Length: 116
Image (tube, rainbow, N blue to C red; front, side, top):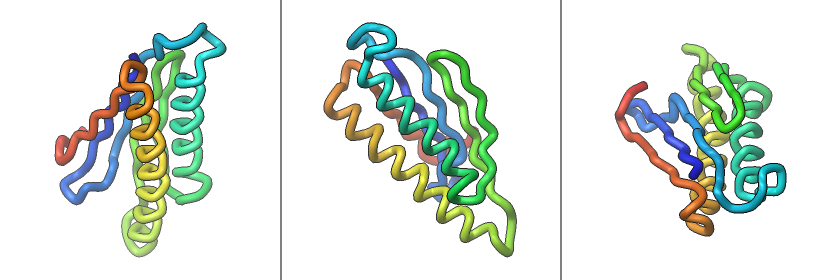
């Protein structure tokens, strides 16, 4: 099973997300759930920097992605934070949709106010 865990700060902003595991559905290299989850996570990680202007401190290996989201302080910080949250929220919507359709393949855990 793939687990996506998301951590938020006290204001509800996503500050980190981590993916671990593999989907048991389908053969390696031909698993649509793994491909969809990977595509969403990688696109969000890349989008944090390219589209939002945030910093993404990411580390990945097969079956694992860990991304810490950082944005600059004022004056541009609020604009960057809003864009970064839109990128991450879009990823989460996609992941939640996949999890509803494939509950044995993907579990989404949203840690509110849990810190890092």
